[in-house]
Length: 471
Ligand SMILES: *Cc1c(COP(=O)(O)O)cnc(C)c1O
Image (cartoon, rainbow, N blue to C red):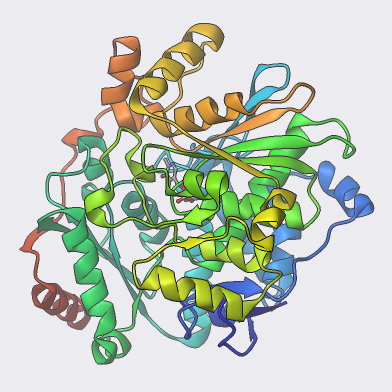
């Protein structure tokens, strides 16, 4: 399997060559040259497999330059009952016949991002060791990405993590998740500013090409192809758990922000998984819903992005969306380049009335938007009706998913975080705090390790230099 860029400007490369990188050199996203096709016989074989076996069958098709034994061993170390609370890794919870929640949030930071990130930690360590190289991951977080990246990279040889967060702006739970880590390769930097300041610092440091090369600065953002490929696995797992035969179709409802999670569902469908609908749910930041309703993709700026009670979806420019448009255009890189010329200049593109818009329906997408009142109502309703407590992001997925539910088609709603991370909304919905999973009871009272800095990229660079030289 080789990888190309959505904008056509990268010579084909193997998986290991794109693993550690971010954007392709031409500014596009990396994509497999073709999708591996799984026919009826292969689906039949996959149906009986454990999560780990399934992960190997899927990932070995994308990462075919990693020796099978090495990949198997990384998968075995990543997907354990110890890390994910069950042998099934992503168990299916049936609310009623034909309505399910796929539990993706039982990893170390209680959000679905752990599923891909935990594997990424092992893949990165493996690749760096082979090349005898180091990597300094610089990131900015306002919520789930930071903890997930730190728990994946803690204690990994050759890797340091420098994570910027806006001081005092994350929930106490999320702050404590990150700041309580005592691993010497994890550095938490609380920035006197807002999330955009943190992101600006990451951009400024990354744009200093000499610094970036010299100090081996990298990222773990959601455009990383390895993350997408690891997420494909649970679509298969969920499908097999919700059906008895491969003649059946299911629909998935996916709480979405950067289009990473649902992009993995799109790839699973392209590979031959019998998915009827991919139901995309946004919150009040409804840029993706607008596209799937009208054909117009109009990313918004920071000033038009609203703070909501499903904060991990407060995204107005969906970084993985270009991957879908690449497939929609029949993999026409010149067309993608033209469309993103507009996007990169802060403008919109509109496919309404063009032949491309007609084709969108062939890809199974439908969409909808949630809002605060609906989230609270759904959390209460699902608790009252089924005795199950969901978080506000999962609630957006359920709300939009139920709106598109079809008789006779099982609906699988993806659970993207546990309610304990967002206790304010839970209290509003049901009147008391959600129960805490074992091991998290005293999280906020653990000793914390972090530094505070001004929103100043030079200060952050100096800090990185100091830590790299000290070890
Ligand atoms: C990241 C995240 C999302 C959005 O996922 P994308 O892959 O960015 O679409 C939804 N819910 C939660 C809880 C998240 O952390």
